[in-house]
Length: 194
Image 1: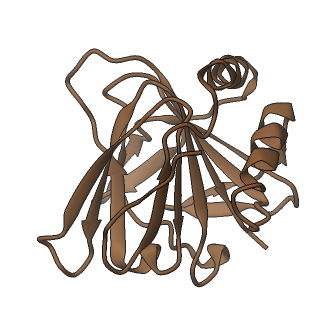
Image 2: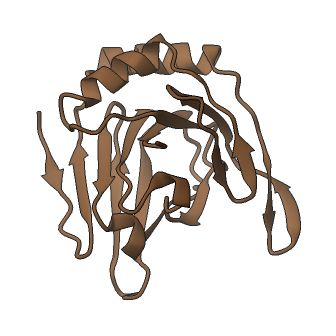
Image 3: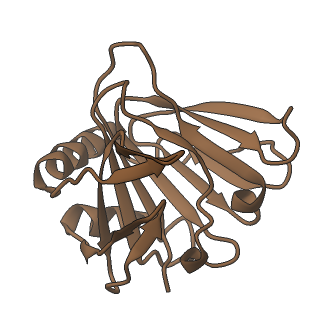
């Protein structure tokens, strides 16, 4: 399996463009889109309340909730698709992922703003395994302190982006909006909540 290490300081980020074969990735996309009970939470930005610009769901193996941006999510048990993808992840990393936050981007207007996955329940150096299904989208990175350090990578259908080590301490990331007419994307972010 091809693996590319992103040449960024203060980080440990690897990209696997063909983590899932296209036919499997398409089948997972189809089943998740129809089977997941998607929700759209509200978030507060600069004192104003807005509907989150994407749909989400949380799954887990240990019933631990997850909180971010004032939103508290309770997990559903891993379904068959998540179990299969998690098993494939275990062949690449010894990490035993307990949770999966799923994001559904319906079109180019759906996005995820600048943030780090650094919530305290994720531990000191969280490992995040991000699997992309459907429409390819650009993933932007910027260093928290060294503003000149920026990077972007196109996340392909069936790809895996693995972030670990000090990455979340030093880097923000986002999936920006795009004015282009594009298709749907489902993003699985596996993580550990002990």
